[in-house]
Image 1 (spheres, rainbow, N blue to C red):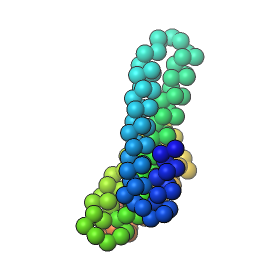
Image 2 (image 1 turned 90 degrees about the horizontal axis):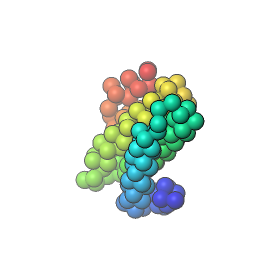
Image 3 (image 1 turned 120 degrees about the vertical axis):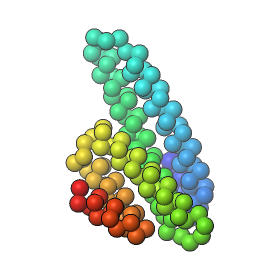
Image 4 (image 1 turned 135 degrees about the vertical axis):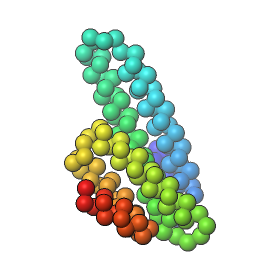
Length: 142
């Protein structure tokens, strides 16, 4: 629900509220990942059904986190396109957040998965818009 609220605020141009909502959503996703990791670590070895369920739970939690990161990066990237003293900081943060989301998706789904490619393209577009041409070119070529 916080992700949807963040998207609504973003669509309305209320970037501060969008960022706050998505930051809260990210904190919730981080807790989910932590709980899934703990459950995965607590599985008794040799119980394949439990191991599979715990692995699926962890993968799902990580992918939900990556999606929340993607939404946050998009909002920050849009804020970076505006003028003002916070624009540069938002751009820097957007790049970091996109990179974190891309790392998660690459690890969970692989480099050639469509979600990986979409994230890489979004990050490259952000880099290009911020005149980080070398980084953008590398992302487009990979």
